[in-house]
Length: 471
Ligand code: HEM
Ligand SMILES: *[C@@H]1O[C@H](CO)[C@@H](O)[C@H](O)[C@H]1NC(C)=O
Ligand SMILES: *[C@@H]1O[C@H](CO)[C@@H](O)[C@H](O)[C@H]1NC(C)=O
Ligand SMILES: *[C@@H]1O[C@H](CO)[C@@H](O)[C@H](O)[C@H]1NC(C)=O
Image (tube, rainbow, N blue to C red):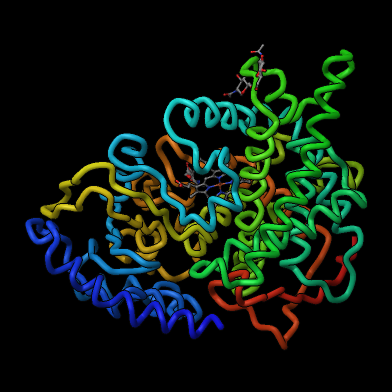
């Protein structure tokens, strides 16, 4: 079915497309160089298949070698300018809302909801973004969230023995932490069933091209409705609690209800979903990959263990909570976190759409075109990082040589859409590593080797065999 539809599209649209390119006003511009591939589908298949290989950046590498760091291609149904250039990326990030707008395909907007933070624009986006930023800021994490993050991670690790699927465990922990942060809900049957539905929603994000014909996508839409219903009940309960005056919960939902902006239920639900979407796959993947890189770099793992054993040694009770000052003392851990985000950031870059003709680096990108700012290409560029494709946490340690973040290091994006979860993700990963290395040693289970870039598509679950460390 899907193949025949694809074929149909490939036959009808090429003529139209070639016509468009040949006759359009685009000829006047000095477009970035590049190729458009096949009619309509362009180079989409090359892009997708490239990300199934072990090489981290084959699609972009090949084109950067041929055309330079800014090039044109044709993916997901339209011409797109790719940037592997740090200055251009920064320009794109900082001019969000002015020269560029965020851009998601319709299939994704339906899953996110019309009122999602990821789709909002203008003044409302600004307001909601700053509300989210302040809710995830370091003082809130220190005073409220850290205790729960540590407790929930510990709780999950308590049940580990023998063979576990790291990716699954990381997803469970991430989901539980986020539910707690957003709505003060502790893990239980309710969260587990929600998590299952939510998994279907996430799968929907990875079935890009033909939503109408994809059962995964239809299931995702259904699951989204279920999740939204469950959240809606929760929002109503909390409103009632507030009105009767016994609302004491300090969480994201509480902050929204208390904000005085009179947000509608629909907005709040889309908003909560956006936070779940933004934090779930990203944080859990980065937790898994940090373990993968450490496993492959025994010296780093040894140094990390030492750092965390020292923190534990200062406590009388082996289960004593991780405190903010402990987190702040995890110096080498922060190098590991930065390096993991550098070499394996799951958000490889961001799509935007130009609001006007853009002149940059001697090229013109026409109004209404898509651009893709590739963060990963910049992170993996040997001109920016020596031995850029090697996991080397020590590179962040040597202050003289340490990479200067800013232009060349943007795992969390930047500008008006800077990730509001950037600190939270770092804390979750650090606390997880703390509990992991002080409690367990592990080896990868052989039959399922970790590859460089896991995606939901590959269904990798990363089994490892864990063993409790003797204390
Ligand atoms: C390792 C973990 C994470 C990474 C690598 C990451 C990365 C990013 C990046 C690159 C963006 C910018 C997208 C853009 O400019 O269009 C972003 C946005 C966002 N992130 Fe994260 N993120 C992570 C964790 C989290 C967490 C834990 C949360 C929530 C609790 C979160 C919530 C969001 C939201 C809501 C946005 C949209 C912001 C907006 O459009 O204004 N992220 N993230
Ligand atoms: C964090 O946000 C809260 C409001 O949610 C604010 O009172 C506090 O000053 C902020 N702290 C920092 C360090 O920005
Ligand atoms: C809040 O918004 C609702 C509709 O969303 C409206 O009916 C109500 O009057 C508003 N209340 C205030 C105090 O603005
Ligand atoms: C890690 O990266 C952040 C920028 O995201 C930077 O501020 C911080 O100094 C880096 N940490 C280390 C240990 O280099």
